[in-house]
Amino acid sequence: MSRQRILASLAGVAAAGALMVVMPASPASAADCATAWSSAKVYTGGATVSYKGRNWSAKWWTQNETPGATTSGVWADKGACGGATAPAPGPTSAPGCNHPNWAAGKTYKTGDVVRYTDGRYYRAEHDNPGYDPVISTWYWEPYTCSGTSTPTPAPTPSGPPAPSGFVVSEAQFNQMFPNRNPFYTYRGLTAALSAYPGFAKTGTDTTRRQEAAAFLANVNHETGGLVHVVEQNTANYPHYCDRNQPYGCPAGQAAYYGRGPIQLSWNFNYKAAGDALGINLLANPNLVQTDAAVAWKTALWYWNTQKGPGTMTPHDAMVNGRGFGETIRSINGALECNGGNPAQVQSRIASYQKFTQILGTTPGSNLSC
Image 1 (cartoon, rainbow, N blue to C red):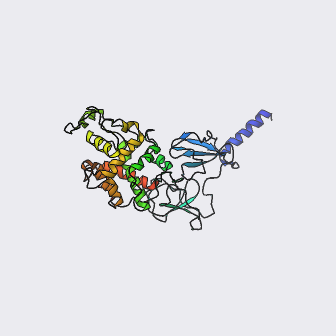
Image 2 (tube, one colour; image 1 turned 90 degrees about the vertical axis):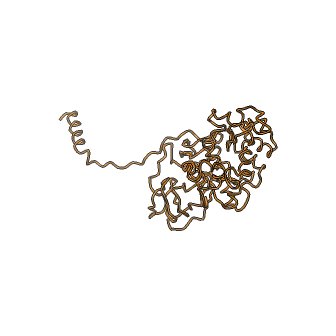
Image 3 (cartoon, rainbow, N blue to C red; image 1 turned 135 degrees about the vertical axis):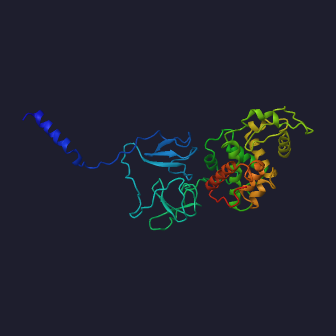
């Protein structure tokens, strides 16, 4: 038999028995390494980098937070890269660990145990709607297969204490507002805190964190996630001049449109805020859209001193236990509360719940108005 016929015969046998052939399993190769992580570069959610032979994916905005070494939990480990053998899927801890993988958005009850994406296990300390186990020690705690909590604290996003003493760290602020306008700086916010020293520094640690979360949640709603510095509907601009006021509108008919984190509007509000802060905002309303510290101060002025359509200031509502719902009433209750616009109310509540989670505390009661 010729060599060609032998090869053809062998090929036919191989084809006929293809479904019966069992090839030995070979280890999976790791993925290619992404671009190396740089401490100087800004990364946004979804960005992938490599560091020390592993790929990492950013969960939110980050800069100078080392993959695998940060306490903020910003980097998700995507496994080995660069030709190394990738670890086999499944739990890497002791045999018998067959708890389900954690799923974002799934409701968990106190005591539920899940396997996180980093291969570690976490147990729910409190009921939660699928919060990320590495974000808050209030809802989750590290867990071992023996059923005993590990002595090592769970990672939290707090990072080093803020120099200002503010209960929100810069990493947490960036996590809350991953797509914010660069105008709204964390430094501008902390610089504004001196104008109202009782803000987020009154009462228990829980109360302080709840107030900070409540303020930032309402700010988030008013600005579309700290995206908008000025009111978007320019047709409204000329409407905000009340000429019945003795001081009129010295900056012009259309100069007092909404600006800043709370969208300060109307000439009388610019006058009142400026008087309280020692800044002539009536004559210089543009300061609220060009100076980040001034912008934050106007928002804190409203939060700490104005009742709006409510019965108390938002600050008093939070420190006196009246709940987040009362802050909504003080900011826009005439249009949103008592069934006026439940979708808008729910949007504010959702942000507040998310932010209290990031700050490692509970939202408390009386969330709606």
